[in-house]
Length: 277
Figure 1 (tube, rainbow, N blue to C red):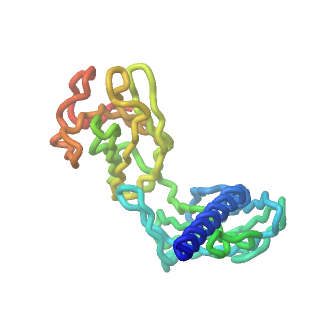
Figure 2: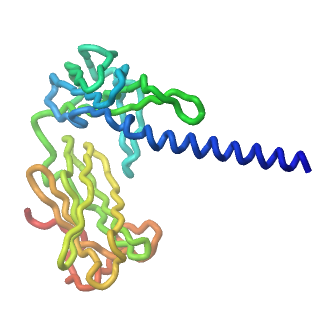
Figure 3: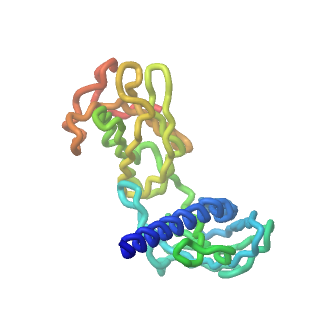
C-alpha cells in the first residue's frame, strides 16, 4: 500500500513539473519572438552588395552567430540545406556579434555566384536568453535572411505553364502544379482562388529554373454550392496567369490528362490552355 501511494505521489510531482515547465516556456515565448531580421528576402544582381538588419527588442543582450548555407527546394516546397556551394563567394562584415537590448545591428555583405541565378541563406543563431527549457537546455533561435543573385532577365510568361489545377472536394483543397521551363528565376507574388462571388488568397512562392512546384491550398469553407472555386490566378511581377479548375476524379494523384470533368457551374474550356494576359 505504501509503495502504491509513493508511486502516485511521484507521478503527481512529475506531472506538476512538466506542466510548470510548459507554462514557463509559454510565458517566455514572447522573449524569443522579440528578435527580428530585416529583410527576410533580398533579390539582388550578380555580383551584389547587401545589408541585413538584426533587431533585439528584448531586455537581455544576445549573442549572434552567422552561418551561410545553400539550399534546395523540392517540388512540394520542402527545403534541404547543405554547406555553401563552392560557386558562391560571400564576404560578411562580421560572422559573430552581440546585440544590446532594444538595439539594432547591421551586417554588410558582398556576394557573387559563378552561375546565375544563384541563391543561399544566411542563418542568424541568437543565444544568451536568460532561461532554459523544461529539460534544462539552453534556448537558441535561428532566423534566416535569404539572398537570390539574379541576372537582368526574369522569367517570362512563355516560360511558365500551369500543368495541373485541380479541385479535390473530398479533401477540401485545390492542387496547383506550376512548371518553369526557362533559365531564369521567377516569383509568384500572390495566388488566388476565384469563386463566383469572392476570392480566397494563398501565399506566393518562388519558381526555380527548370523545376516544378506543387502547391496545396486548403479551402476556407467546404466545397459546395457557392463555395466551389472555379479558377486559380497566379500573379507574377509583370504578368498574371489564370487557369480553370478541373475536378479530380479521386483523392489519389490525378494527372492532367485524367482531370477532364469541369467544376459545376463552369463552362467547358480547353484543358490547361493558358489565357492571353
